[in-house]
Every structure is written in structure tokens, then in C-alpha cells.
Length: 136
Picture 1 (cartoon, rainbow, N blue to C red):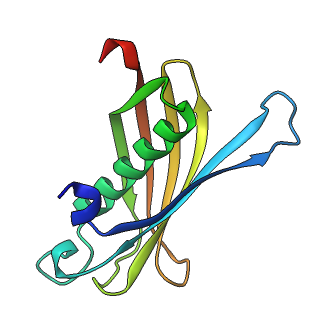
Picture 2: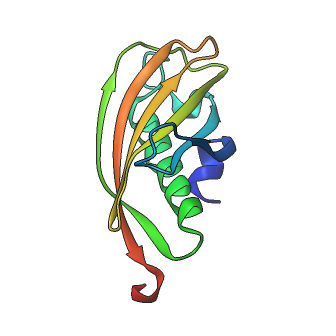
Picture 3: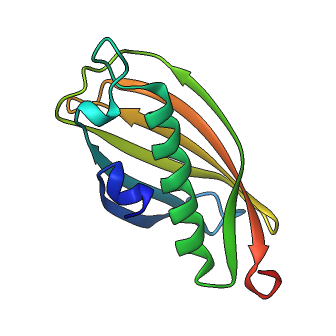
């Protein structure tokens, strides 16, 4: 069993929006969901910040890999989080990602984790290093 399964990460989708700014051809976004249980809780019954960080890094990596279509493999390089609101460990959280930088060697993702009512729980930035498949 991998971390995706253990964390109950589901419904992952990457999609693009056409950009009105012609300097960038596509805007990449992703969504996913994490179904919560006691496994995700800190001692007071709220969502553990570490689970939120793992959710963000895993889904950002999945999105970078999907965009790369097998040309490279994304490796988490850095992560920065602000946990803005508590969430009882029940129900689920949504994750929304927006690609801020689509570089040759890295991707920078802005990620928002929200509750069932779209109240923001955490705002996270993930930087992925893009390693060519031939180097792995």
C-alpha cells in the first residue's frame, strides 16, 4: 500500500484553462480530495498539518508528472505552508492546485486545501524539481 492509498487521496484530476494572456499558452490546474479519518488527526481531533503537507506534495507531484507525459519525473524540492483554519478530522478536504511556474527544471504550485464548504484550511506552495526520465 502506498501513501496515496493510506491517506485516502481520491478523485485526482489535472486540467487546463486557456489563458487570455497570450504569453502563456495554458494554465494548468488540478483538484483532488482526501477522505478523513482518525488516521489524519492530531491528538485534539483536528486535521494534522503533516497530513495536509503530504497531501499537497503528493498531488503536486502527480500533477507535474501528468503534465510531463513521461518526459520527466517530479521530485519534491521545497514546501511552505500556512495552516489558516482548523478542521475536525471528519468528512473530507478538497485540494485545488494552480501551476504558477512551468519551468524546464521545476514547477511551482500554489495549493489551497479547503473543507466541504470551500472554507480554506491551508495555503501551501510546493516546488517540484523535474528530473529527466533518462537520468533515473
